Length: 103
Image 1 (cartoon, helix red, strand yellow):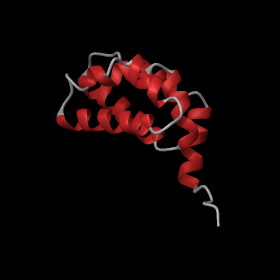
Image 2: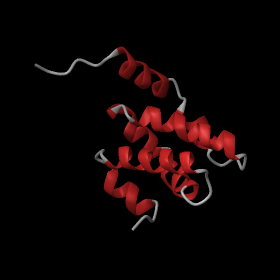
Image 3: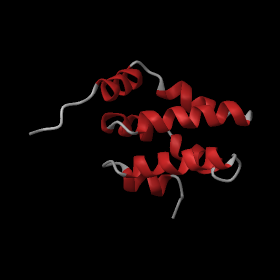
Image 4: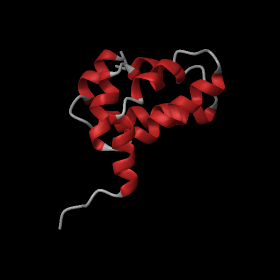
C-alpha cells in the first residue's frame, strides 16, 4: 500500500509552490539573528517534503545555511544542520554539498 500524502505534507508543497522559498532564502542574508533563525526554521519545515528539496537546493540556500552554522544560536545551528541533512537526501544532494563547499 503506497503512502498517501498527508494534508501537512501537501500544505508544505503548496507553500513552496506558491513561491515562499526565495523570500525565505533572502531572509537568511539578514544580519538580525532572530529573523534569520526564524527563516532557517521555516526552510527546515519545508525541506521535510520531498518535492520541496530540489526547489530549496536550487534557491541557493545551502551556502547561507553553512554560514549560519558558525554564527547562530544553538537552535539556529541545529535547524541549519538538520535542513542540510534533509536536503542531502534528494537527487541534487551531492551537488549541494560540493556547491556549498562543505567537503
